[in-house]
Image: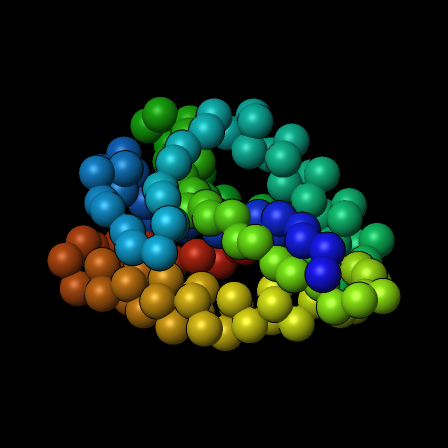
Length: 130
């Protein structure tokens, strides 16, 4: 079966540089980029989202850390095996991508972010992800 690499990126709202010190399991990692680079990346990602008919989300201003003009995000790459004859198609993901989302991203990452809210004020969350 052919393999494809699927890249997950989730932009964090209400985060600051202290998030970069947090270690995550399953290969997730926190990182940062300049606001200007983040808006360019999100513009490109949004074009792809619209092209695949998945809607649009915009860029929440809470994803900008004002004191440093940085955006903080979480990322991970998944290996995805496509079934014979399967292709990327508008409005759909390969089975493995959906499985990664429902078995790792949502149960692990979103739960971990919720736990962080207990220790840091400001309602850290992932309002935008691709």
